[in-house]
Length: 152
Image (tube, rainbow, N blue to C red; front, side, top):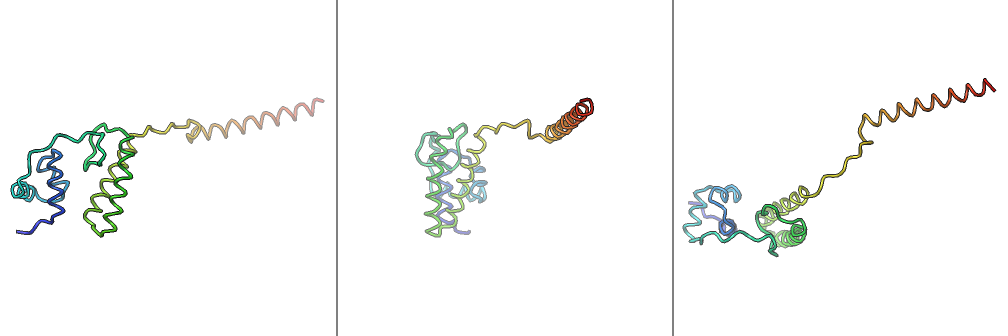
């Protein structure tokens, strides 16, 4: 049997403590379900802890549903700092995990932001209509001026 790296063991234990099931842990940690079961058995991982509250100071591995954007804004700098520390320590597995977490946080923030209001005047049909109207107004103005000059 292949020895499982300590970082992977800690990750599996951390995910199990967050309440994830073995298949979810295996998918997230990119190892087999059998390896997850072996880690849980060998290291006697306790039953899952209650779900993380959204007000926690430490950024979670997985973002809970409905978490406030203000909390996500607090987590982003912390994850960036942890990422910089992992890169400085040349711990690429931790850096990869933190980069994934940072991406998730940024994506959550982007999805929670309100959609930008569309400017109806930026529609290509409206732009073409504006140009047609402008050309028609100029034609009418020119025609009116010519008629006045001839009639005067």
